[in-house]
Length: 459
Image (cartoon, rainbow, N blue to C red; front, top):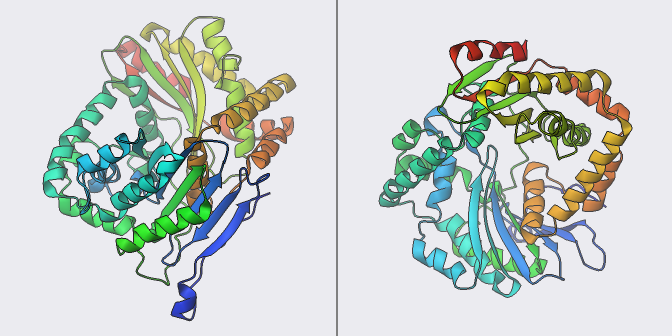
């Protein structure tokens, strides 16, 4: 079962405002898989999924801020801030933060995306109170000292250099720029050397104060956890930091997008002295709330989601033109991307692109065979369930669902939606997505004559 979470509204008395609201969003079996949500006074949301059979727990805090919230001058600020929150608070030094989790064999990390940021720790269930205290302290009490900003700048510049040394990774940033141009979604999450060098401690502190208000945060915990204990510990940590001040505050709604402009038929080539050419051929996809996303997921899997997929069979198995070839989708609040990636010898680029384009055109016109759809649905269902047999994956699912959708869906409901995809659904979404004029991004050592022919792939 699923139920849409309701928003906390302002109350007429201070006593009423001090009451937290708890809901059961997904009912598990015998307590297993139950998802509960509590909205605390001050707008902080806490969601948990209980799995009593494990001995671990993953605790995370999701922030409603990503690189698309940055101005051009602030590009990279969200990721920069992610680094700085590990550098110390008024209660803990950077060494104290890392050693606290190391001492109990825990894992702690964070990641920044286009539309959100997440900080998390995975520990034994008995050490969950420690993880909650440390991560909440980081999120509410970061000092962001100028000396730490200057030191971490070097580490971030090295991270940018490391990414640029990996063309198979860098080509996806290039494709985002090809599709979105000089738009926040088209800029790299890490920022650039110039923007990172220009960021100051004062600007990052202002960014922190604006985007890390409790109304912009979702706390998520999964594993052998007790919901009410997690809520009490989180509330105590935020109140100790003085973070739950405005009892009338309500959580920020899921992002609704900004009607991002996407382009078609563009080609971008970044010349690099690499052994392979790395290409992404793609077109606009679907927003993450689009109901057609289930059909697009099946379509993407059938096209390039495994060794039996069309692209893998045609490009690698039958012709040996590439070692790695796959299709993927990215969904944002208001738009999305569909892409096909391949890495191949520079002399084979045009052959690979022609095969990929031919397969996309054929599916756009005729759809998929029944056996392809059945196989793709089975692959999706299996990978979904297997991927969630980990407390970290469970925490990611419920945290992201609350932040991005404002609701939770049970695993059984997800599997049902996948299984319900029909051949007509596939034909319709293939026509809508694959029937568009594609764009192309390439990184590699292509000669002038080869480069001039790249436009043929998007004609």
